[in-house]
Length: 452
Image: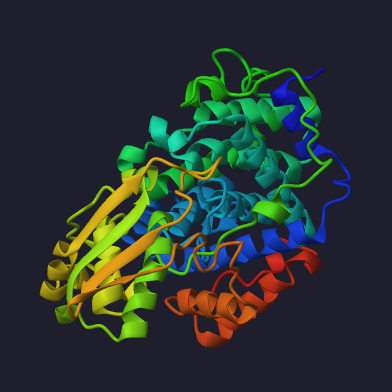
């Protein structure tokens, strides 16, 4: 029986990709659409701007655009730059302990654009990458975060390589080499959360996927047991030291993970570990009409692993604030919202925000929902007006796959992101085109850049 590397490779490039549920294609479309909006919003962030300056404009007609500038880049560079932009605001979707779309979408759009792939082919490539990411995650009982690895960077590089192998029409052997190459390119440390290097993880993973598939297409080789080997990818990244690498058929394509796991679209541009607590805090503040001066204390009960990601307890910049539970609670209290306009150095340093952060404390539980880094629920308690107000336990954040945004809310978020760079008419046209992605004859028909 083929091992894990060869099984994932064969699934990645099988044609046709039979039996894909419509719900999986719909989830893929949501993930790609939301990611494009967030890419546009993030393109002017310092991390994305620096990344864009590091690559040269391409004169090759087989390139792909930086989004939304339209600057022509090689496909590998476009995947890199757009991946950094997509993760720069930490506003991109969440699933499988990481951020699948900010790796898969930049890689697929860049390589698919260069190859003239159809919208349907792009959606199928996303499904393939997602399913392989989900399988690898299932096989590891521990949390990569606990070992210091960023799942977006680790799982993402392999998933993107599988997606790009499909777009390139690779054979089984070539696809196995592509996955092996990407396994050696995967890298990203939790220690770099709250810095520009975190979005670099997404950009490099997307770039790795494109590069690995292209190298394999040209005859470059890797170990066709690179995932399961005793010195391979799974064991090297394993926090448990015991990934399930038993010799068995993983039955990829016999059942589908994407319709069940989905993509959780972020309502707030902060680390997802804060979102349930933000929902709870906003409910308390709005329902009780609380002002900052009326609140004496805020206490958050959350997960130990979650707080491990939220390493900035007294942030002084918007970037640091993305990884601060204290800031999340302070913003909800002071501004009664936690949006892009609050993620500025100026807002973070406002005296009333700094004062509100001092009122926040937290406690943690080591209990997690199996297969995730999250506690079963988060709770917030606010002491105000001489009494304590307790939130109910919040199991799922608004926007999660279990509490999905409506079509109107998805559109509203996209347009809010896109208006940073696009006129309203252009933003609306792009959103509508992405809604019909599966019907596009070529990705080059997407109006990803402003009209001349």
